[in-house]
Image 1 (cartoon, each protein chain N blue to C red):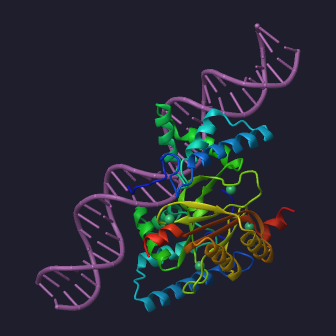
Image 2 (image 1 turned 30 degrees about the vertical axis):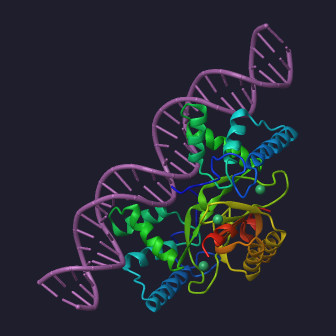
Length: 168
Length: 168
DNA sequence: GGTCATGGCGTTATCTTATTACATCGCCGG
DNA sequence: CCGGCGATGTAATAAGATAACGCCATGACC
Ligand SMILES: [Zn+2]
Ligand SMILES: [Zn+2]
Ligand SMILES: [Zn+2]
Ligand SMILES: [Zn+2]
């Protein structure tokens, strides 16, 4: 297990950014979005969302489960977490990273976007981007194939800037 | 279980295309590629490759395992299949569809390409494309983020032409 | 031909991820 | 108060993947 300055750490973890603010912000937006839609962001779901946001790394369902169990002080069943995640994904508050079987908080919930990720193989951080050029390219090519797109998945593995600097 | 005119069917299954030819072709190219590289395409690996090519749908490792066990007439261990798949993926003969935890034969082994797929949610077929525009777009955007790409994953879910026609 | 190193394969156990089936709880309109 | 419905709890199990260990076939080398 490697040291992770970002996982359950306090504020100002990554590059001096105040991660507590990230979390608070995400929760506020989630509250607003759900209220607006009449969706029920229950205590449990909110809790899971917060745990997903605990870092900028995609987290596995069972990792979240452990956190949840620990925080609740009692064992929780996998299904509990999966159900919460299902809700969060449906409402665009969380994305699933297919190539990692893991989940990460959405950077821009509410906005229409397709979910594109740059996943660093070294540090594990994943950055969500939503570049119209990629969306457009996929749309064009799909159209050329007569293919009707419902859900594009773009997950780019590689090395992030920081990790490149560390190992030149 | 839905009817699948393409799974283990004989020749001329899909749209009159001679799938037996697809398989034979894939095996021939695999033989050539491995010979060229000094890689050992053993009987087992060749068998697994053939089973992967049994349809144009991505197949799960355990589905392949069942086929293999049946064909061999004796039970086979999961690891056997996973090892063969690992070899095939490493040599670019097979791709893994992350969003399905499944494997599919490569349409253009040997050629440099990144692996982009149009996956139909109705019929399950997956078509491999390799459009330079998508590759370029990803490359550009990654560069803008200072991100060094090692393995891009593009898996587009949606509905293929045929399935659109069937349900207008 | 004999010997040895390598890599492929078999066997078993185990791990991670995800889902199915069924019971219960709590809120809310009628 | 009551019926209905969505959320949660509990238990069991499916599906996907890997770890640890050892045997055996292949082929280089002597
Ligand atoms: Zn998002
Ligand atoms: Zn990194
Ligand atoms: Zn390919
Ligand atoms: Zn289709």
